[in-house]
Image (cartoon, rainbow, N blue to C red; front, side, top):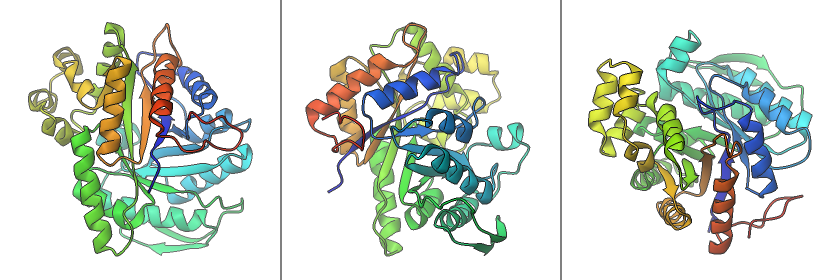
Length: 341
């Protein structure tokens, strides 16, 4: 039986200092969380930030989810191997397809055949990070004769998914499934779907990690941060369906109808981020954490809300660490660190 894990993802809140990420990383390391997830949006390059954080031995890292329409499999593999070689830390990798805004508007790339692209990239990246020479001609990716010259770290490969096609790819190809901005009920549905696809592929169902935004006793400023952080997802394919399923179809329709982001932000209720996060008292966070684990999550990845008074989200991270220790839902820690249990 898998022991549930509790990890941390670096937040990149739009109205907060980007360097809060370093403070969150330090807190997660000190508190003995299982691993630190390092993604990227519009601030740090994930590989550069991971190398800066990992200059001294510490918490294992998971990089991503990185957008496969933006980075080639070779650059992803080189980045992962570089971080592993330069830091000496355990480094895993997560891949996803990101959103139209990020891929087309920000990077000027095409976002097509997303499930196929995710699968082809995953297969090539896995081969490269296992030390193999890649030879592949697919519908979305092509590579010939490339092999890493750095030591191959052979990491766990996670795939971010939600729609059935992406979940099928994750079930066939990934070592782990990553879900973001989902309710416990949606986690349970996705876990069941992945199990069915994995059975059809004659392989064990990969475990599921769930990113969950969290804050203990959040104030009005924290909810303002949350609303700003989530407003951009309301029109994104997949996320729009999740929020509609969670009961916020009117807000999604407003966003998809072309309303200005300020208008959408003003209409966005606090209940929307709360439906896909965990907020409130210590008791409320404990209940919510238990609900996600009960829904089938193998790993909860906490995305802490930071503030001027608490730039590391330390109060939230300490509260959840205490909750997990009391419940005994902890592994035995990792080398060089004190376990939370």
